Image 1 (cartoon, one colour):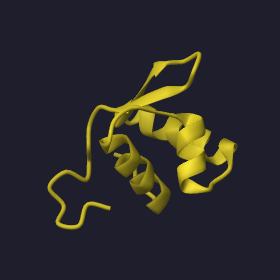
Image 2 (cartoon, rainbow, N blue to C red):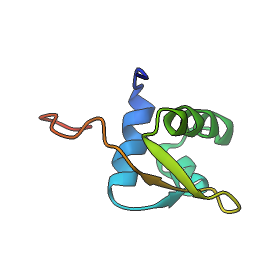
Image 3 (spheres, rainbow, N blue to C red):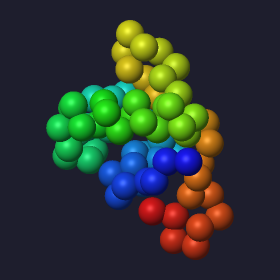
Image 4 (cartoon, helix red, strand yellow):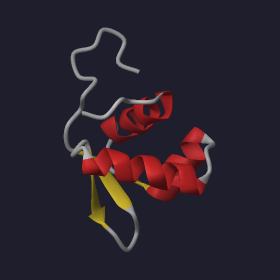
Length: 73
């Protein structure tokens, strides 16, 4: 199991609203493209998110590890 960072939680919150591109996630979080790319790779390896369209780097949430938490993110 992966230890979620605050940025991971932000990414999950964004993807709860629906699919999003890596660029959109970068814009929403204010983090660098490389950092978000790395975090998405870690979340994908943990089967939390999935890159459903590699050409456009479109991601969706497939397993919400924060579901059921009182405050979510």
